[in-house]
Image 1 (cartoon, each protein chain N blue to C red):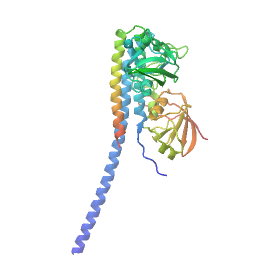
Image 2 (spheres, helix red, strand yellow):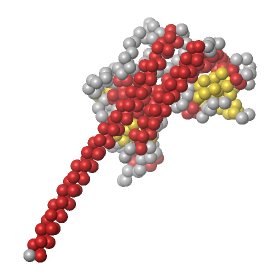
Image 3 (cartoon, rainbow over the protein chains, first blue to last red):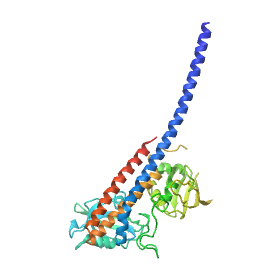
Image 4 (cartoon, rainbow over the protein chains, first blue to last red):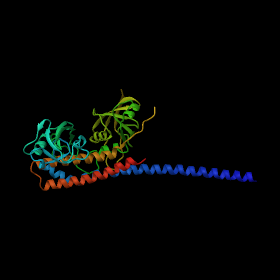
Length: 304
Length: 73
């Protein structure tokens, strides 16, 4: 009788334990699903903030561009004023994440030379602005800086102006009006990175450390931790992006910046390391409007 | 061979939003430099400076989302 009782208890406990485990499993799965959904919402909210912010600023930028205001073909991300008098161009502010900030420039610095040309004397900020108009996108700019009485050089890579506001830079595309005559509906593929965002959504990247590089068989590139939700680039988890149209990304942020600079319909050549083998992929950036499905436009793949 | 620990991961979608805002702020800053250099630092420059302040606020919000997403398991 007593044995039967304990046997029954054992069966009940075992059943209950199994039921709890099963409930825990399904609960864990549910939480993971919710977490993934929350992650997607975060990403979407971030993109919406950026897009809506651009829509809000667009009328002002339109007016300024009509008046011929704006930098040349490339920017370095510094705001200068004449506070430095004749000593040099005073850096009033540095754009966060911009080329100057990345090179180590700080607010309060004095720019005393650009590409070996001295800018001291009358109106140094105007001289810097004039010299910058000749700089090409992705061009190297050597800037001599005076900080706390010490002079040193910084080397910057100028970033293209094109597409920053969803329009070409002034005079960069022949035969086009200053605005490019493009419509702007905020979420369409004509928005900078608009079409590309759909292609990048869900993708997670990591900068390759020497240890990671040894594991994946390369000493350079950016690791794809999680491929994008759509298959726009036919990337897989564990791929290493070696180059994008010949440009070697130095980190995840750089890779994203390069990829986001393409417009819908443009061709991109990716060189990857997949399972320790080099692979070239030619893709076309997909067009994607708000609410539209995420299409795929892979053209061809070949291994080396 | 064991996979080494990954130290820093970035969501490409959120990063694209960040770089987009950063590029616009850089455009605004270089434009302000040009405007001031050409003596146009009047109402238009003030409006553009306000636009910069708004973009910075948006950038902070997007960076917050990015940091939050990176901290998720």
